[in-house]
Amino acid sequence: MHAFVVEQKRWISDAKFLHALNYCMLLPGPEAQQLATYIGWLLHGVRGGLVAGILFVLPSVFILLGLSMLYVSYGTIPWVAALFYGLKPAVVAIVGLALIKIAGKSLHNAFYYLVALASFIAIYFLSIPFPYIILTTLLLGFMLQKLYPVLFAGKKNTPAQRHEQGYYLNTDCAAAETSLSSKQLAGRVLLLLLLWAVPLLLFYLLLQPFAFWKTLTLFFTKAALVTFGGAYAVLPYVAQVTVEKLHWLSSTEMIDGLALGETTPGPLIMVLAFVGFMAGYNAYGSSLAMGSLGLLTTTFYTFLPCFFFILVGAPLIERTQGDSQVKSVLSVVTAAVVGVVLNLTVYFGTAVIFPQGVSPGAIDWFSLTWIGVSFLALYRFKIGMIPWIGISALTGLLHFLFL
Image (cartoon, helix red, strand yellow):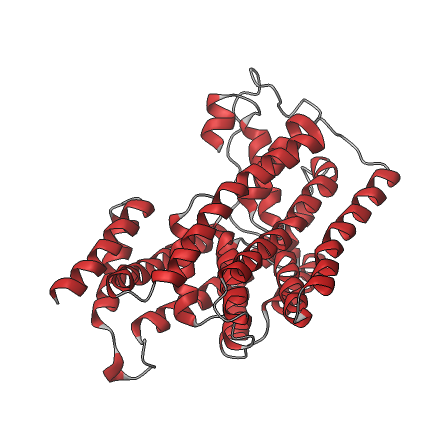
């Protein structure tokens, strides 16, 4: 996105792009889709934001819908299962690599390491739900920023701004929409509530059991509101609830869904759409139609708040470029996300290495070995993620055919 928008088309300057990116990463929701919406809003106001945000997601929705149908229809065929057998260790390595990257950017001193450790203990050992961890961390960050600001000292990422001339928009230019009146704000809030309520009303009138669709709607709305730190941060929460409490899918299917999400274009948060598909598919006795409706419903409620945050919050965001206090408070949340992603790594790693349950004699040595190989390939030798996913799937197939 940076190469196209900044370097090739020169629509916005590098400093403008980085400012938008920094704040999208601090918002709940998928930052890539929000960044696309933000850039569209910067250039052409609400219409630009809607067009950019919707078209960023739409292709992956239909690709993942097709893959989900193929998965439930043919996923039990031995050679297809073998492809996923090779994919799963690679996915564990990918999540581990994401953990290292997020930790490197987020843990600036011992205080942040302690926050990350506490977050991991809370979610892994104490099973405290992800939203409570985020809310507690926000409150902690606000209090400590006031009482002990020295805790937030650490390395600062202050890349030099590139030359601001020659761009359609730079830091000296006003966005297409620079302010929001009380009437406009009320109108957008009302529209959000209407868009949220109408599908739920249709489910009540047309589909039974309504309780399933109510639970699906409320869960993914809540997930969209607490996904600080991107897809890797929310996946432990989604897995914890949908696999262990709601029983919409198994832990193995959850990992398979992440593998599908990694292989499709668009934001990784689309893994949630796969979860919605499996929920509808299983709830209605292996119905592809209900699975498809579950996927579309999940996508709608996952991304609806994203548009609201940008189209309502962007004018304010544009006026807070120098607010270091806001960044300090939310940096604590980012540190907590590291602990949550560590939990995800352990969760998926355990499911892949010990598919029959944790015990010394139940280790899947192929999976354990391929996790290590995958990590070296991605981290040390910088092999691209998509090519390595293909290599891993082929390796799983060869293992099935010859071993």
